[in-house]
Length: 251
Image 1 (cartoon, rainbow, N blue to C red):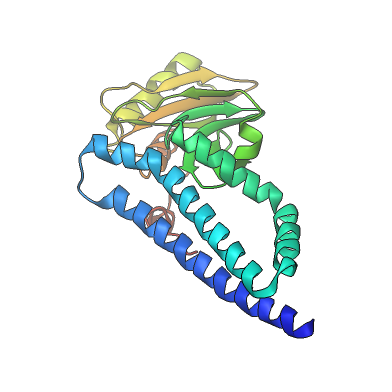
Image 2: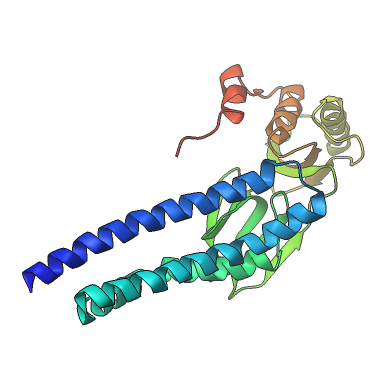
């Protein structure tokens, strides 16, 4: 019995390493689809079908692995793997739900969405969850397993522009019309702002104002916000902060 368990652990370790390598290969293919110079329509088709293809390959690998383990150690493999699936059902459910979500093209990076009590701009359409930047500047991670049971409201990102919303405190003694004019002028003077779509300035509770600017891309949107804040006497982004915007995160 002990020898059987040791054999099972060794085989499971080897198969797990293989699964990780397969997953990394699928992620690399997804990266190549995004960066290779292919027609836009073909790229969008590949982006939609990539999650289905990835799930199919992983399920086939899992089925082959289970068959191999069963032939080598018998029902012990089935019982242990059933326990692992039951224990990890929540993340597995999120991944499966994410495949359907991404294949349906429900939303993409840059869209404004509201799901449950989370509202903001989509930063990433991941494998397990949707990463949303809220209007307070926080990042909310919403699992797909939660999204499919709720109504998702989406505003598509405009062609050639990415919406970026933030809240500012109105300077003392400045009326709303003057503040709105100054904000719009500061935004359009920033060379990272869209010249097609005018910023939006809306009153909020107390002395706060919500500003929605349109940047040429999502990476430079914080620079437009920084230009607006600097024009109102706030602190613009420091050089170090700007560098961090364009430094790929580790891990």
